[in-house]
Length: 151
Image (cartoon, rainbow, N blue to C red; front, top):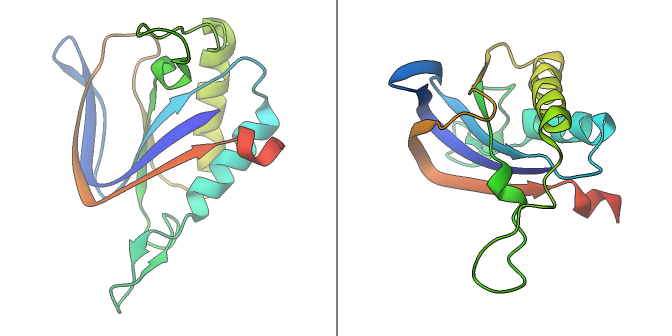
């Protein structure tokens, strides 16, 4: 499972001009589900993200988590994060999990964020052509890959 986490002051996702999810201060999380990913990995990732200390404290030091600042999360599925670009110039998306499995893990990941104390978790529309708007704060962008924890 791969996640790109962006600290934002606000973010939204729209489909066909209609806003499907929006947040204020928190994380925009682009989530890619790879073949072989598990619910256990989703739980580890959700817990890590909820506790990731990248918000500034009173001394302007990145020392506070999403939980500490009562931040929100907008989770957007993005199979292109699973692209294999080793050969040629056209990415292969065969490492991506099949859509039914990817959607199940995507939704479960969002629920696991809630279970880890994130009060407001919004979602995009799985498999849709989405337009994502964000105001990156910092900018702070973190990439997490559960493969790193498996090894």
